[in-house]
Length: 89
Image (cartoon, rainbow, N blue to C red; front, side, top):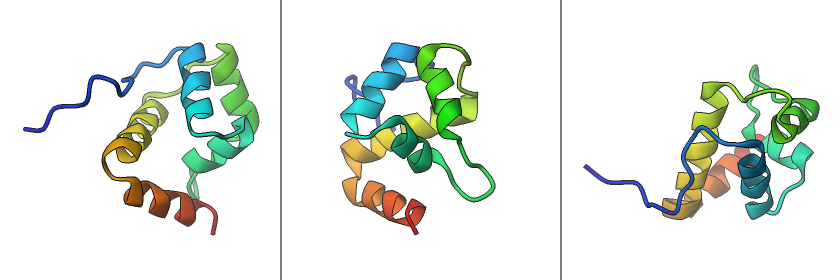
């Protein structure tokens, strides 16, 4: 069984942690909300803002998706590139 790298943050994420993750991708809040969104499961930029401000907690599925993106960036950057390309089409 493969272990997770210790430097990849794991859920649950604090508001400051969410902001740091987004900034580590070099994205604005609206850009990162689009990165997480998929047809039928859109995350509005105001929802992301509420998560970063601590006004709402991201649901478990969103936190797992963030963890998946962090893992992809670390272990499979080509898969992350494909994810980003799929979201922008």
